[in-house]
Length: 549
Image 1 (spheres, rainbow, N blue to C red):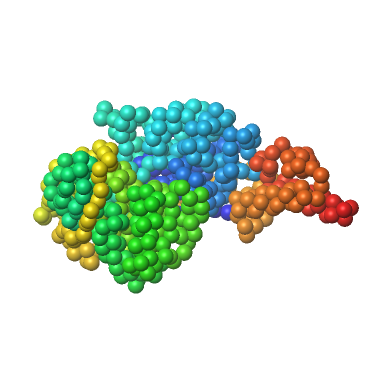
Image 2 (cartoon, helix red, strand yellow):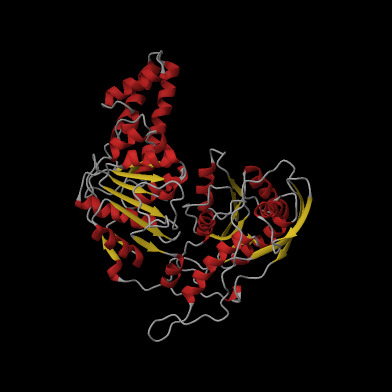
């Protein structure tokens, strides 16, 4: 049982701020890799100790993150149902709550509201509630009766045209967090995130514009938004040489890193599934590696990502599946090869590379980017945070002026939707761009990991008892409860299939009879103990039916 947890300093400040706030809504904005999940689950544990009996509701952006939350919760002895649907009138008695997705909430807000009444709700990457108007409305309907709503985000966000429920905004439409912990803060603390470098790759691109005219330009040329978008699309086309040459350089960088970090991995963020598979082909043919491909159209993508996270495979190619929240600490090299150029998406992508691994010492990460003005601006902002965090201070602790500081760059806005009627990329080749600052990228030194501080050791009260689970009882089984529950559900399904082949009854009738024998209405509400009794009943029935044939 998890009786204690060593916090990071910002997590301790955030827990103190949450306790002092005392209200229903709390927004924590913390840089990717800093431990938002740990903070939120620690907050839930503390609240449950004070108010036992409350349900936990976690809302995550994707199915993969749903499972990731359940696994993290289980390490703190919080057991969450991942298979909840709108057709589930009750949860198993031996779970603390459920984890679902924003999309599921949009389809079953009224049903979820029954579980969320007086519950502790965690809204992960809460800006997703503004992705579609219906999503925000559904979150408000489902969670308005909660006792506590803890909203999390990896980056500051604006309301744009869709204000997100339960979030306060300033006059400029920017969300007002109750606690904020940025990338620069994390670098200053040491042992939280990695410093990220951005090798910018220029190029010479040639294409047929949407009006049928011939065009050619490098990233240094000043173009309007439409032509700039066409230039970027040409560079990223797998028909040209630019993307292949960049992958060569990124792979060489990864191989160099793997000399001291043997399991280090790389991520290519592609534009769409066809583009992802084309990039995978380039990695096979030019680098001699078999990459993992994760695209949303593939139902097995979440399993591929989970397997990759625990393997030593060198590369994964994804579209949006690994852009936010996914925890793969061994990622050290990235290639930004997508036409999605918003700052929010860029920061989320960079966030996949920053997760600190204890014991490695200096561990810089590298995101290879097209030298596109929009991406250059985003990278420059992050690089400034990095440099700012490493600047020297005077005797009073004030930051000293920087030498050779570059001014802000006036860059074009995001391009509108491309008119692709006649557009066609013709050719591209890469040209190495200048680094973002004068620092030798091979001379990066990491701040030392901070010494352990007993003030950051959080001692937990026992988890409130649920169902037949006794926190002071015997040690839990080697198989964690969530995996045990799934194995028993699968075993029950197999037994029902076997029975249907022998007895003259449908699956529905067999399931109904087995549910009656253990006193449940649906298998989705069964505790682990009830699942075990149900499986035993099915096997007994199967043996009896086999003998009488």
